[in-house]
Length: 300
Image 1 (spheres, rainbow, N blue to C red):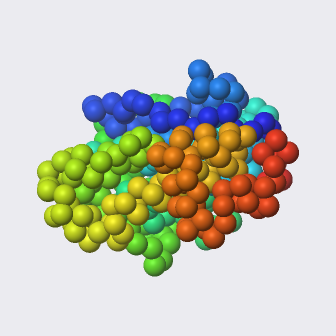
Image 2: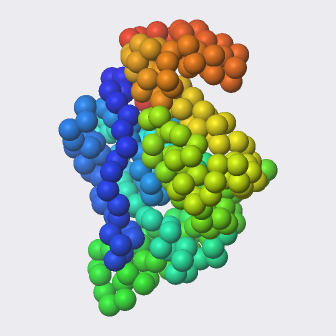
């Protein structure tokens, strides 16, 4: 498979009337978003669950490449770069859901976290509690297809069941999770940052989203997120830079700009401080030269 051509933010929101969408992916044309290049990574503000029923391919997200296995369930969190690439005809359900509405209507307000979250990314059929995760997905699929009376309510309840089981059986221990509903102002600030960090972002601008002055915002942000505002933005930019270094042949200068850094010098200093090596060494010594690298079925 060829290198990644671009990384872009998928604009648009789910319907405010029903915060869940489902589509069936049967081939590469269904999987790719047209108009952004042949091979793309994209990200969006809602959750996505990919359920592989049959076929071969790879799913790329969270900086990893996963080879499809029938029964795979991929949990793709808000703002994670991802896309699926098929090597044969497949059958995969792609469920996108805005948990804001589901949380408000059904689930406890403090169950979910924004950003990396606390769930495993990949759940395979060998997982001990696999059937508890699979069952609500099958129920969502059935309700979506049959659309019997009250089907939307049943689908919402199934989404709730899915994420409750994820929280119970697929949680990662010891992670510092940012509670979505814990502070509305910080939540608005995070949503703004996650959508705009590749552009110049001013502290007073983000504090305004939280309806706070700068000093108070910095204190509240660190309390709820566990790091400073500047560290959070810097980490997002570095994560994107690592993805671009691994999966594109863009120059280091282009990557520094596309990741949101003001100049290549600032990027190089931040990268070396975080990882102990320069971006060029990261690319050539750890992952090989970009033009030689590819995404293969054996990569995992």
